[in-house]
Image (cartoon, rainbow, N blue to C red; front, side, top):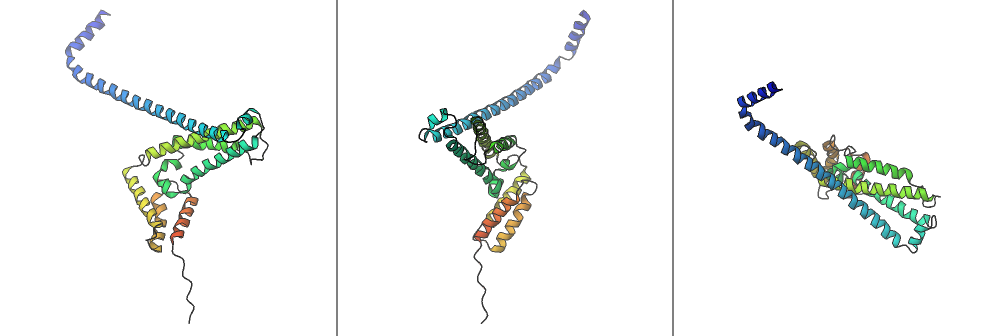
Length: 252
């Protein structure tokens, strides 16, 4: 044991100058790790706060809607007494959620502006899609369907989870926009935006609008998954801007 400490002392005496390099390097690495840990912790806190806020908003809105209905409080206590009214409100909220989601899926301009909302690889977007699938699976066929109290509660909770998940995904997509793309990819997105504006511009000629429309998908290919339905909606929107066809001139 004494021999070990003797060797250690001789090493330290011979290489004492290493402390000037090891000390700052170790300190810098420790600070970098600490900064990274703080950033991850802060991000987790932001997600937790956002989720809590979104859920509080969804619950408050639903409670306000129920309070606006005469006798809603007593109906909530009386199992099955007002199932149709409550189910109608849930189905309406479900339709509104689907509409909000489709606005990103079918609007090419929104797809370009907020690409994360159509990217199932994004964690929050994937979480929304999973939650929506659960809510869709629990959705009764109509407000006239016979639904038990337990099934109604399960559907309500699943729909609330989907609403919260959507709000989180939307907030994150609006925060990051195109930051996950490279500089070259962002230039392609900018080109697609300009082409999109031309495609629906009344001042452009029909040929210019048609060419711009055809080039939009080419620019987005490999960057954003654009559905055929989204392109069809864009085609319809562009067609609405086209001047009405002139009636054929009859020969004199």
